[in-house]
Amino acid sequence: MSTEHVEESVEELPERTESGSAGRLEEEGDVAADYLEELLDIADIDGDIDIEVRSGRTYISVVSEEGDDSGLQALVGQDGEVLEALQELTRLSVLTATDNRSRLVLDISGYRKERSEELHRIAEDAVSRAKTSGKDIALAPMSAYERKIVHDAVAELGLISESEGEGPSRHIVVSLDS
Image (tube, rainbow, N blue to C red):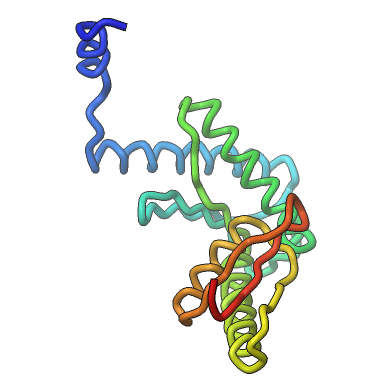
């Protein structure tokens, strides 16, 4: 590739500004909300959809309209497995509509918030057990999203954590040192 061609290519790229990025995130939120509204209609489940853009990421929350979230609980599934699948499908709908890969986070009925609090307690317990026993503490397998939360919590508490294993067996080991 010649230098002239590279310079032309760079000039043709759209300028990335804060407002451009925010606009893209708002657009992906709108596309995701439309997709989820259609899904809720098909499933005959009532729910309100809230969109929030923060820290360079779009957060979509689906909450019960009338306080009865039994229909929404089916969309969370056991251990959040259905929620993870819906998040991926929603990301695919955004990709299809915008040609941009999305890092949006989908939450249903506050499941992710509650799970995050639980993961912080798990991290605190593992740190405490590691300090008391002086031994490495292996945790149960969890998703990449959940492992990130635990890694951050363990680091805040002053210990080290590493992910080990493959696929669905991937888990965190908390230790005093590396």
